[in-house]
Image (tube, rainbow, N blue to C red):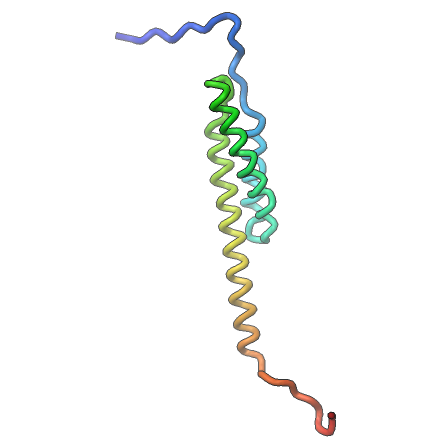
Length: 114
């Protein structure tokens, strides 16, 4: 048996793509691209905040807002941007610690200087 699709009421609105999902995807892409330069933290954070609001809007719209896959992809890209920024900070910290550790300790003044 084949199921018949549910008939829509003529006054029901047409499903539309969520603009917030598009924004989250764009910000997630920017966060991923600039993540290693630590600049990705800002768009990633904004993307995650907007994603929470977009998800609530989609649930409230009961199927009339689409774009769940775009929203999920944007959130994943935002987290990748955050991970890249954290990795860059750890690498910079390790390089800084190694640089300080390899430099000679103590102050060296020229002879005859007080």
